[in-house]
Amino acid sequence: MAHVSRLRRLVSVAEPSDVVAAAPPVPPLAVFRRFWPYTRGGRRWFVPVALFTLIGPGLDAAELWLFKILVDDVLVPRDIGPLRWIAPTYLGLVVGSGVLGFADDMTSTWVGEHFLLTLRSDVFRHVQGLSLGFFERRRLGDVLSRLTGDVDAVETFLLSGVTDALSYVVRLGVFLGLLLALQWELTLLALVLVPLFWAAARHFSGLVKDASRERRLRSGSIGAVAEEALGNVALVQAYNRQDREQRRFERENTGRLRAAMASARIHAVYAPVVELIEVCGVLAVLALGTWKLSQGQLTLGGLLVFLALIGKLYGPVRGLSRLGTAFYAASASAERIIELLDQRPQVVEPAAARRLGRARGEVEFDGVSFRYPGTSSWALSEVSFHVAPGETLALVGASGAGKSTAAGLLLRFYDPDRGSVRLDGTDLRELCLADVRDSVAVVLQETLVLHGTVRENIAYGRPEATEAEIVAAARAADAHEFVEALPQGYDTPVGRHGRALSGGQCQRLAVARAMIRDAPVLLLDEPTTGLDMSSGLRIMDPLRRLMAGRTTVVISHNLLTVRDATRIVVLDHGRVVESGTHAGLLARDGPYARLHRLNALTGSAPPGAVLS
Ligand SMILES: Nc1ncnc2c1ncn2[C@@H]1O[C@H](COP(=O)(O)OP(=O)(O)OP(=O)(O)O)[C@@H](O)[C@H]1O
Image (cartoon, rainbow, N blue to C red; front, side, top):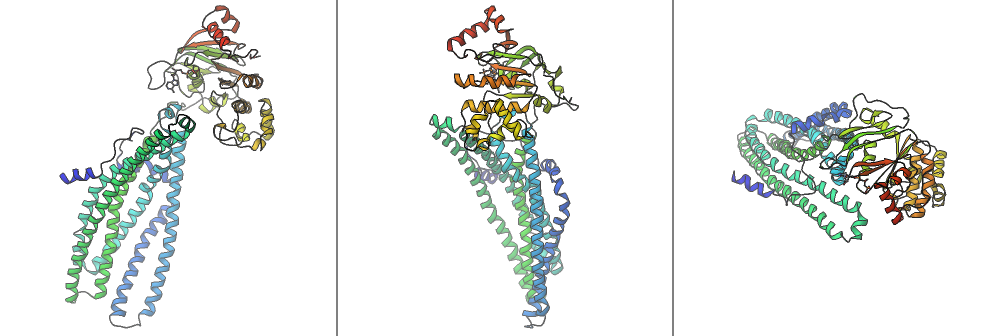
């Protein structure tokens, strides 16, 4: 056992990564069962692929047999006669193998790529369907690395690996049959060494698996660190943190390098061991074969073909044992995909979800309490309010009071722990999720602008919108004028996070997008955050037009846009501490009045910025 621990030390990897957690191990058979359904589109090609696999070794064997005849009937007797039929047959066999190889390559690539397409798009659909909570907990770069590198490795596990294995087994069968027919004693001698191959393969495969796990894990960490640093490049550069990010990136890369070196060491030890076993076999056969030749029990052609066949026999044996290690390496990736696929969305639709035509827009929070997963304090507790269709409700409160959390619950990004959120009198949990989200148009705190043209950004609200509708929405959002002034008008690319536009312009695009969505409920989460006084005032008219005739929940902590709301609900530490109209709440001289005085002092509520 000492040599095992010595080998283990050979593959020891760097200090553990704290960026990405390892996926739990899964037995190979379970991996196979798990991914088998993804082969469904390509299964009809399995028969041709199997046929090509069967015919290939047959052609190889025929070529070798021709070689035997060539030596025994042409070279040894020095007679050119049989060459007349040997030459065309040989050419025919070579052309046949070429055509077969082509067909084999095409079909197996198609089957493999088709599998990848199905699996990758399924994993993507699954990840997109996960609740917001998942994305808050996980590193995006790691998820991306699973979607790309790990999915590829699963294909190796399931398809290329299996077809290769099949081809090796067939080759073994054909060559073994030929060898036995030619010289059974020599064959048995050659076979004595096969168990040694297996023992070596088994020994090394466990080590390979450890190193491969570490390599895939490090690839995920590299993706995660790169995504975080490059995604927040402005922050990194502003605070001169490039060196720190570089160190983090290099640390994960060094981890990957060590894992790669560990697996290279394993392979470097493994290859000569296997070669040694093989050479022993060939030498033994050569010795016995030469003796048989001298005794006249074997022709020279027979011996040469025998040696060539032995070479061909060891090929698949070696291939099979190598596949074993490749399987183990790929299963490390499979485990990472399975772990991703096993994530369940926290927000799920009931089996018989109720469809909701066009909602009237009645919104109700009834005794809602909510805690973010993994936290101990309540973000909302016992929150109740009711908004009738067409009315406007303003949620106000200090930073961290729970306003955005309430917005998240209304969009059903999360489910409340207690109480219920209702739309038109029905609990959101009973409704079709797509209907809930279709009923609510949002203009969020952080302006969500996509990498695309102005037109694409507006039409994201309703992809089937016509050009006239897009322009009408832009006009209503007071965006048409500035869009027309852009170099390419509606076709101007706006860059990632809308960096080509000002904050106010981005916000007006967001209003146009919400406008074109034409949903009965409108959710405005701090629509004026980050805007200066004049931009804040400028957005008011478009917002008013957007709110007309819709139920609106407006969230604000600077009290802008809230004074004329039908009702104002004041939140503090997740609780409703006050509610009423602007005038009524001011008269009570409670928390709202205090907030109002504070705002008047800081001047964050422009005079006249009121809802009509
Ligand atoms: N994803 C999250 N995971 C854990 N806790 C969270 C999460 N988001 C918010 N919280 C916590 O929930 C509480 C309410 O946060 P919320 O964002 O709803 O406040 P807010 O009133 O919208 O604040 P602001 O006006 O600053 O946007 C805070 O204590 C916050 O720390």
